[in-house]
Length: 248
Image (tube, rainbow, N blue to C red; front, side):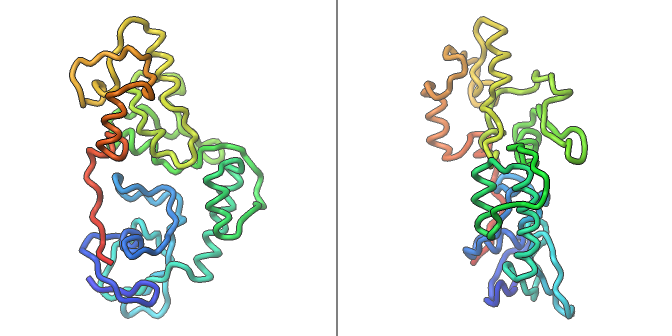
């Protein structure tokens, strides 16, 4: 398919999203809830762009991670309208996580250094990456969203049931703000059970009947280092085929 991106002609395969096409062309479009191993989600809305379709007089604002490339469309990723919308969204993120270096750095790129909204001081920005990787890739469904509005948060079932967690660490790996302590609660629970416990690579299905003698201190584990070095990402994410990439 042929389309125009910021005034330049581009091509992309059928099924490619505007966000994928933009990034393939080297265009920076922020999106904190997007990951190559996961299906589009559209939670953060930072990836909004202006799209003018054939036969339409006015462009409309769309979430680029959800909007597929179509023949003849014209896409603008950095208009005054888009920058204004992103600054507003970044103010909201900055109000929620004012102490997060990730959020502060992202906001500063758009000139946002303070927010007009009340601050919550929560490192979790509710991007949903951890929840989706746990359910869609790991298949454990050990965490999810609870409550609504400003009280919305990510936690285990009822905030107390950690039995589904296999301590794989995929949630912590994809978290952009480092809001998740690496498998802390589940590891503590496994230690309390006493005796020998299975290696987390056994729980993830990579090994059979391996036993951990290091109390899940994976930084000391040769197996863990081997898997990570070979995968160049978290091993569970390496299992997932990346989404189709556009041609620049």
